[in-house]
Figure 1 (cartoon, rainbow, N blue to C red):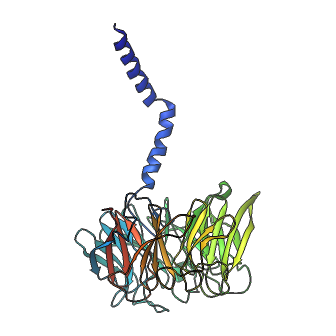
Figure 2 (spheres, rainbow, N blue to C red):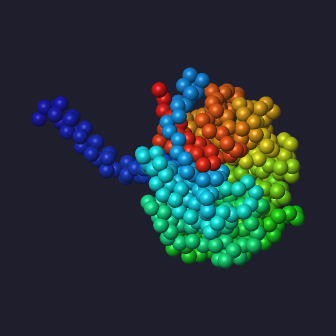
Figure 3 (cartoon, helix red, strand yellow):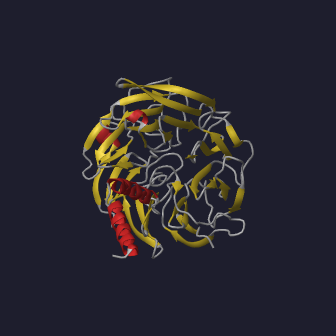
Length: 443
């Protein structure tokens, strides 16, 4: 047999052996995971990973040369400050209609409201009227929380109600936040989690298909005197010290509860304020980063330490409100740096070193707009949406603050607090009753 043919046969055999070898089989799940992480959908609050980061690439990163083009507008979302969820060609949000608070589904292909489903009887009464919850979409089902304290599961296709639970009737919640329940529920495996805020049921895990209670987390009053009950934040998952737990910012401060049974593992009160604790916490490894606004808030980095079956909290640092705080609008963690709008009722662009808490840049100079800033991230760039309406693009780099363009959306009505969403090459901005879709594809 000619030598060349022998070499080719050996090469083919080696290639086949490699493709079925244990090493190559072990690598396959990693590729599947990577593929899952770059989903172009935005199925709930702060995206698929609750970090406000889109993994889409090759989008428009120079708004000075190519200002995002308005693709279309849709009216009929109702009154509220909720952000939106996008799965496939459907978009979901919540809003106050003429008579009731509703979940709203928009057909993005037809560019019109597809269906609405009332989730309250009458519109809840509280400060800054309107809905707050960004629905969570999972396997054809939708989960949403009404601002008067109830969680519902709907069929995402047509809005048919599957089950509903009342915070007061089912979990004994007697304290409603002054500006309404604002949480977006977390779907995790077979469960959906929410925060009724009752002492015997601060956080609850429910079977996502039936609504039956899996466990209730008892969180007694802790820390200095102040408000009890739920805050305005949403739950995130931490695996600190190889112990899966749910981290939440409630009215008293930060808490961590064991994922398996809801047992309180730790609590931290120092950043809590008696008015409103809002920003979703950031987690990385054994660390939790939390921040709140108002005069008594501030920022802290906590290291979670396991001692036997118990947990202790090591305060790596605390920065008082005057030095570092996020009112609302959220924070984004990229590598070792936190990007945020700093200051109560201000969105001064800032980059903070996670481990030291020191301001790397910004924090003192106003950005392209005024008031608090809601953030999102794509392709190593930050979207700052200011309360005053302006939307700016800033490089997500720790070296310096670099503005890459700014524009004012077609509709600005009230405080522009709804967080921007990036999905399938489009940036969605919700402004009360109006949805605006802007093209982010590179030209």
